Amino acid sequence: MAHEHATEYAAQHDVAPHDRAARLRRALAEDPRTSELGVAISVRGDRVRLTGTVASAARKTEVDVVAQEAEPGLHVTNDITVVSAAEPGEAEDIE
Amino acid sequence: MITIGAVGDVHLDKDAAGTLRPALGRIADKADVLLLAGDLTRHGTVAEARVVADEFGGLDVPVIAVLGNHDYDRDAVPEVTEVLADADIHVLEGDGVVLSLPGGTLGVAGVKGFGGGFEGKCGSAFGEPEMKAFISHTVAAADRLRTTLNSLDCDVKVALTHYAPIPETVHGEPPEIYPFLGAYQLGNAIDCCDTALALHGHAHFGSERGVTPGGVPVRNVAQPVINAAYASYRLPASVQEPMTEVYQPT
Image (cartoon, rainbow over the protein chains, first blue to last red):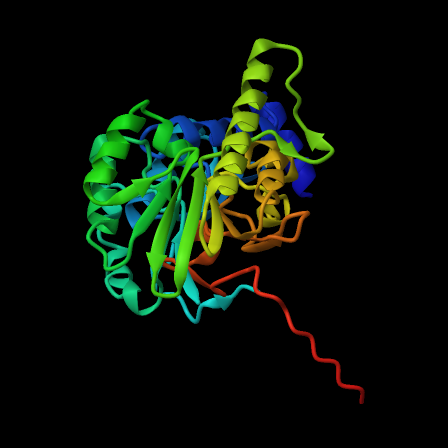
């Protein structure tokens, strides 16, 4: 029923889910607080799920704030993780 | 043997300062050189470049870099390059460097590169001036990469770009944005002249491993892809050593 939900939501808010995803993508890329191009955005009805990695916990929070400001009608699920800075394992042999 | 450490897309700013340093402090145990594949900063400001300089400066191995699209955002490339150079981080853009390392001489040709897409699904220098400018920027970068690779006199040649030279290492990204992630012209340039390895970043959702049409190994070292402070690759000192094949009938 997700599709019906999305259609109903779009009708109420006069905007399609993919337009919301596009607006969010631009906001996260162009807002200087985030400047994130590496966040995947998935809009389903009135919910958006954000995935990907960022360089710090503070940036994960900033993405939340900018996304919420850009689309206040959406419920944001922030599944972004902070990238690992661990030492690498064994070197790969390049033949 | 020469062991190369490499990472791209670290997107440093004050909030992430120092995160890589613990692993980098011990890099001399694991690599002979560190190559940085662009997007070192978030917006390309001088303040962010200083964070990069603190993070990657003063290591026990040489550090060679190209810049990425994020590093161009504030139109301060000369200032950013100068801050990095002051920390002995050698920024390449259409040129190269040869390093004498314990395992042999390593030549690195570096260029940011640009987009346009890959064979059969790419833009052309046709139509509007904006489109011609877009593709011409890519072609010029690829030409400089080819010229530099050709000119390097060394045991091992490595190509360092920010944008991807092949589609395999951007696999995982939405296909619709491939033309913004790399260009086949970079791959053709890499195939020109016994390149041992090509390293790039930019595609955070891409894949680590691929190969050019001419058989050169390609590695996407964007930090979100390698999920470590850096990745390391061990190369034989000469890619042109004659191979001896032994056939033993069973």
